[in-house]
Length: 78
Image (cartoon, rainbow, N blue to C red; front, side, top):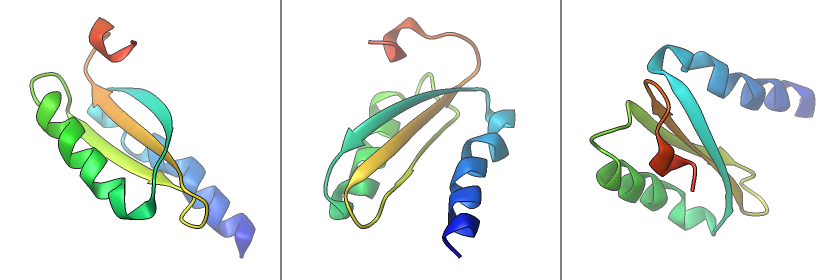
């Protein structure tokens, strides 16, 4: 069962590659803040992103924040 879950997690980014390049950020925050960080990121980057998602380890807090864009965006690298 654990292997099935890991395979699903590994496929998340690949499943949205039609939305452009993916900039990924590992961040740690409480589970209750996962969706809020997505909302804030979407708002702040609304002019450059095609999609913003977050997923991660529900039990221990690490979150992968993914911002999808068409083409290179220097402001997403810092």
